[in-house]
Length: 513
Image (cartoon, rainbow, N blue to C red; front, side, top):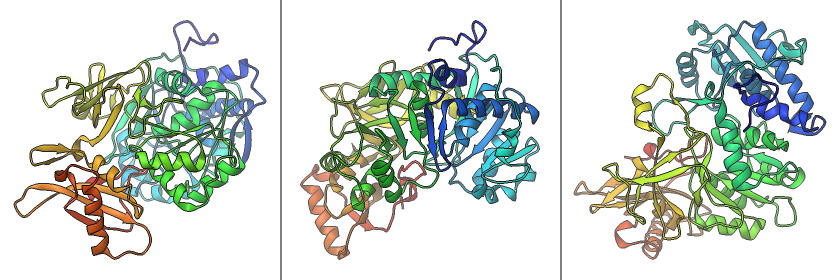
């Protein structure tokens, strides 16, 4: 993470670190990005990043002002994201699956001066564009005319002197996916991006220049941003971007035909791929390994993937606040049912209700320290103080550490159940039920019984034809063989689908009575 030689001493710009070094290393002609429009070399990417930075200047957008990026996964995303950073402007990538209300809130909260939006998403903004006084420009990716992304940069110079930013300057924001409440804008610094690449991607995963990477998680997510932008560019690798949704059909075709060597996914998608009958088997792909985040990976799902695909899924946990993964399994060191061990450079501690560290083996609240931590939530001082406490960031997850040092996920802090005075992890109950052949997905929440005491309730997405009453009793009996007697679900409800965030996290609060 040395300072770039082209910048004045003491200055650091994340875009220079990620892109310019590839040109110096002789990778200008190498393919950086493959998307729906074709292949794009590192030289082409660098030129368009500089053109975009010049375009921002022409629009009158000043350093440290915010711009919103509501963009599908095409080459326009890294061009806009890194072009803004190079100019000292603050890009704010946002979820492309939100509502008009959400978008209006984010535009107001961020006080963005420009909106860069993919053409199919523009209708979700049009009704309220006039409600944001700071907003002066709307540029459309995939559209024509004078306000198109292509025309904006077409006549701009491919040369640009990077803004004299520093490692601790504000660099970009990411809004939390929000399992509850409105999203919060997490402020990240210039040094955060390369920290995730150095500590997780390079040191933990062992990514290489000859890798071809593909992420089902979109670039506007913290997980997807690392997978599909920071990591490949940090080593001069190639990334495949999927513009549309990561359906089993689309993902299976990419794995089979475009031969990525690393696939970054989420547990729900891994399960859907296995159930689809489309997933390539060992020998029909080029994968070295896969990674998983978003929700804990059930051991049974890992086992079925290993048997079918022939490679490991390296389960880990990260967060928007920490930018990427800080606890992870590793190549050659996979403990099924665990989230692995701390990534080098990160501190992990588990604390009890009194704020003190819990003994090994006991469940505690997860706290993290490390060089990729966000600075604060924008306009949210109270919540910032709750989450960012000195060097420690509170994750909102419950974990325990086993005797070998591996961390075992117990659930979200807000999702924990207290049954008969004893904490019960909903994930433990879910992991038991998911082993049943007819259970595709499951979420466990608390429900009050006739004495107003909390007991587990399971909401299940089942496969095939079944009689609800029969399967309900079968699943209760099955759970009793896997769990302590007080942990089995007293009620089971069958549904067609579970509510999730766009990252694949189950929104259990929507399932509570």
